[in-house]
Length: 297
Length: 297
Image 1 (cartoon, one colour):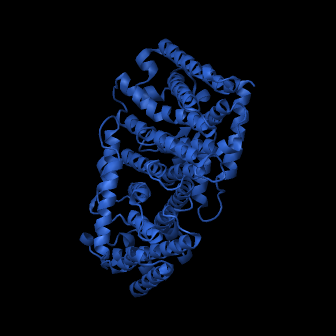
Image 2 (tube, rainbow over the protein chains, first blue to last red):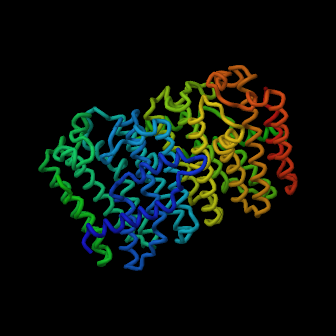
Image 3 (cartoon, chains in turn yellow, orange):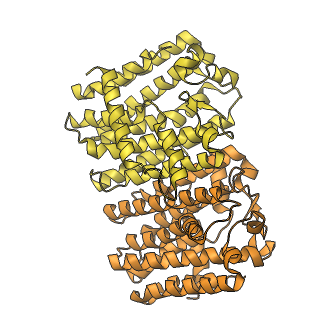
């Protein structure tokens, strides 16, 4: 299957699942639910949940039971969405646009946006512990642990805290790597690994998926930095040049555009090398890795 | 054991446990960890984790393995602390003092405070899924589910969203009850029930603990409202009369002080009635219920 068709198909599957399991905005808590749903359904490529499913497919050799994986995939999207809502807040990056649409707090106000994020994060763990998903309970606990660590103080939340601390300051390359690895890399890796674990990954397979995740996370970040420099506002869905304006240290600002492109290519090659232990059922993972550097820049 | 001695002893046990399992503020993420630790260790009665332990004791008939319960108890305190940090934010209640000390954002700034809360919430689920606690994995998943629901959009977070929406507005008694039940009651009930579940509670015991939790949650809220009216700033650790100033609907404002006291007493009596199926190992739960209305007001 061509990767774009795969991505489209699975994006629909994930959105249909989320539509089903996230509460409807009725009853006492309707305004809060509405704010959560706005950001969850405003768009997005659903990269993390798709990686989760693709990781499970690679491990299960085509016998992947989607019903078992969707709660994990859905949880990853809830966590990702919560992080975007909080990152966009006036106290953080103060962004008015996200995916070409008004950010959560510009519509619902700051308090509701903070709570929408809190609700989505909590909801993720409700999905992960849900009885209706059926992997072995011990595996499920390992998946929860892995995701909590990736999303927490030594992962995504810690990375965002560093990003805030170093905003507008010159940072060393090592620090930049730590920020990216924790802020965005950890959750990307956890997505693909958690899918693999739920499908019964061996230690070797888990390690391969971890290497894959770390490398595509890196590629993803470099391409994001590049897109901010060379894309158009329309293509990007947010103002271009916002990194430069915020005086952020990025791959292009440190290494230049050509070298950054080369580094992204290397990371994708490393990701592909990690997958040699898998058969053709890892084609979606391979396709996603390749697709990352084919994004318009 | 006298209840005050019980509370003091277990507060120390919980604080020692949290001190051990929460990361030290060293390394790349030190500033973020420091902000989390500040609010976690600035004080507090540790009511929720103590309820968790007392619930386990009631069920296990004195054979409670504290090592099994402490990760759950610690998680409840992390969730409670995160909720206080976010509730105090300028966009929410905008409080400068909490427990007589500066609130998190007044020391670390808004962005760091939001992230400290996010980190503590995520950390709670890391503790809950930790392998080192040893209840049956299926029970552990049920506990995670219960706590996620109590802390989430139909529990604590949803309650805070209603509190924001109705701030300064006249609300009906039914709405007030919904706000309290979700904002504070749900987590209190989840504390005592999760401890009971981890100790192997039967359905009947679970129901008894749920009734107990709901009733002491109610008593707790009424007393909190009363303290805000009749206490002194020194006793309360925050400015008195802040509810009235914020034009909040409270039990005293709806029913007057005497009737509110009577309602609190009734709730405590109902809580005690729920415990008749337990033997003397439920004495701590009984003591806590009675202690609530003996708080100075």
